[in-house]
Image (cartoon, rainbow, N blue to C red; front, side, top):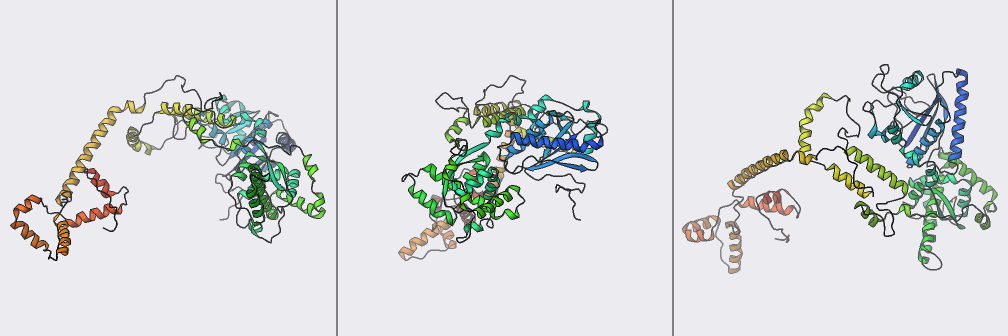
Length: 613
């Protein structure tokens, strides 16, 4: 049966709607009983314009990885609201920037209610999982999280809605009917909005400016359309053989030939710059000669290592724009189409439309070159951080690692992990399990889980202390009620289990020894009879004597009991010994069944270094 979808490409077949990966969805309602039905649409349009104006002001110089904030009016079964969905690609910061914009927008009207979600569902609750009330779980949290006037509100369980997930209609009816019953928790709100604390400063902190050597035509395109760098870098980062076809063609015409190169400061986001610089990429034929010449002149002729690095980044960026321009007609991307239009204008106007050197010098920030140390990992400092000895000899704060934002995030992670370790009621997902419906079958496995816990213990206090020292935080944890470690509580039980296991192993070893003894496998004489026969055969070959058969040797042994007793010959299964030795040899020096079995009986077999024997 063909599946139907709504205008956003989401299924309408009754199953829960699943957002694509790296996509955030948001809906905005105006809930006001005093607002007439005919005025709802104009009111929503007013909110939409206000949202775009706010985004334009705060993100004027920001470069979105993919989609920016976008809203449109939607009428769904009588519900009239604003809807938007933005793909943020590899930049998770774009998702949180959208959340920040929507929270700021909610402060402009007491009647504006906002909900955000992504492929993880109510991801704001994921951030606050450690402090959620016991009644709230991922199975029932759909449509229960709303933002109003900058605050986080939760729709509680209700007799009318039951204990399952809410539909959008039910959620709106509940808010409209009784806002006083909504749950507000400052603790949950702080955790859910923790990532928003660094905004709006994070908007500029996420940008990176770097001197880049590239064709003059591309410098002009970037000056006119700075946001075009995002789809170009993505085209380079996600390149395939088809998109590379025009670059690999020696005679093919390119939009940005590597000629008339200039060095200008290009504005990236840190994500885009890292994607571009970290990629291993073999230069196409048109760029090979230029890069080879630059490499040969590095260190002399005024070419520095920085100059070479800027040329390599410029080559990658130019290739990205080549792929973007060649596929602009097939891409549903507004910026790609705008780049194609700029290129068409340049084709008509000729090179005289390109900026001169003096014009480029007049561009704002044309020589800005930001520090790239945020991309580097000093493994010596990292090792010190792991040992809780971060910092240098200049008096910097011990334990520091990365920039201030990264340090704060890591310290937050340590605190959350420490809180989880100290929470005796925490489950596998960090949520409390009290008052939750449990499967009756779980009781069948309680004994097994207890036995596993006896064998494997974890010193939570020591691990938390280690994590805090690694992050440069105080090693001492605030005094609180703690239980003795599990390994201390259950020492007697564990010792009893170990003694029982040792007895079982000894009994098994005795049985195996008896079985092997019955075949003579453990009575290996250094010179067994058949091995002696081989030696005698070799000696006889040298002297021209005939070697007696096994039967003859047995008779000889019986007749000469003295000789037999002196040499302490034993009757063993030669084939069993031979097979054991060959099996041991096939292990190639590694662990294997024969080596392990012999080791149990205290026998160490030597390695056979000579394959010929």
